[in-house]
Image (cartoon, rainbow over all chains, first blue to last red):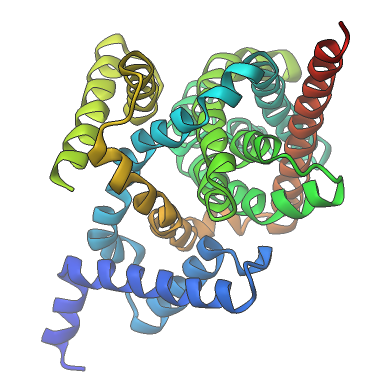
Length: 237
Length: 119
């Protein structure tokens, strides 16, 4: 490759957009080939393929993100669009609203408390413990909370993403193991524990699960933002 | 498709404006979702353009998280400090959160059903 060509590859947003779509398409084929096996998760496989291709092409994440940011931008309108499947499930939401809201509050508190307590048990340094606390919330909320309580915002963002992938992979096998076959339970639990990455995963399984995951993701972010600073202070004092 | 994006971006815009002017740490898109949901409840129906286009959009929601997933490459030096301990914490706490959330909801739904079954 000539230096001029490599320079263009680094600068053009086309590279990041095309590589992302390609990695997703290949991940989708792999997921279908293994009949939606949890480990053939499209975000996990797609991101892994992308990391390998970036290393092979000698591109940094920042160069890749010049194009990929256009794709990430669409997360905003797609999050708003979660209102439509939720509205389609209005009857079920009305019937179980109290139970769902209580579970979201309990689950959000469990998300912060479990991370802090287990991290302390593993003797991780305080800054890392504080960056782990908001990891169940969506990235913008987690970054804000981590900043407010004295964690490291970039580290918090990394924990959010890894948490989302772990939750997206484990949610369904865990609930199947426990014989919990209700799509509402799958959706709410995944939305609480694994925010948008989990929501995207359960949308592949059922629209109802996706709708409730989207609701749980939004409200968990809200509860985490309010509760995490107080809870962390209480747990670490 | 144009109308769909006008709806979605419009609600995101409203959400961002409100969150920023009040200084709330909530993402504008999440507020936008709640506003759009309330609008649909008041309207008692989904506009045609959203009904047609949104389901197709949702099927490929995973695509939008691949850039963030590849971000692990940029974060690697931070994560590689004590990788096993951090992986263990993330795995165990995510399992705990899933378990506690699912059990709480299952118990509450069962109680609710039990109450309805009684005359």
